Image 1 (cartoon, rainbow, N blue to C red):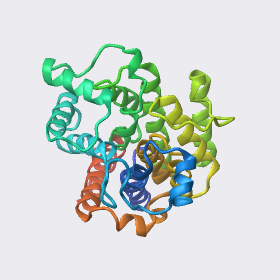
Image 2: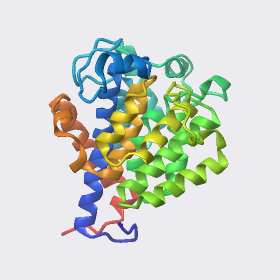
Image 3: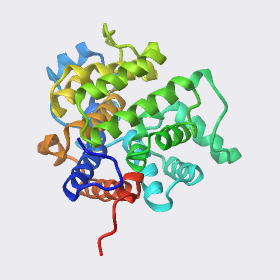
Length: 310
């Protein structure tokens, strides 16, 4: 396990960078895999694919194999902002607005409403809304987690702040923070038992996230999303197995896949990302993810704590 003290060995920091890369790339892979079966039921998936194990595109969005959706695109908006200007919710909101004005292939209703509010009124946080308990903020929190490595308090603050650009609901906030903490723990090489303990602690405070017995729901409601992701992450034993199980649950499969991919990518590391999946993504996307993940680690409290080599 990596120490997060004042200094970290080059080998340990290299492992963190690799896991950070796997976090962002794993999220994109989950998005691309799951988008094919978004809004499908498990029985519909079985009838058409048996078990969906390959990135094949299609689905209701008629995607090309390896094409990603709003989950990855909004995460990239945040990652680019963090790599450029450190922390600015206004800059993130501006990037969301520019992306939105470019007519993306998909954007969730709550994200659409929040971005429109920013465009029309310039506010980077909306008021509490009972309808904001969707998964659109949680799906894009991974870059914030990487940029706050080694500082849990900073993570909690910024994970919620980025979320409230579009979603202001305690369940959305809690999901963003939990995903971020699991990414922190995975990127620093902590054990599955430690991650399980973090999940259990969150469930004590937010009992609706309890996933045992698993109800089999994978809707865009953040509770269903988190139950699906946590159930499949803890009941599988590899990155690929986790993502295949998650997206074959159907429902909001691009988002459950993206979140599971981020958590599993951090935990299992880059060696477990299936090469035949990675080859389906655009090379420019893979390259940008590699560059951005490196920038985010370097600018994180963990990265900044390392001695400068002369």
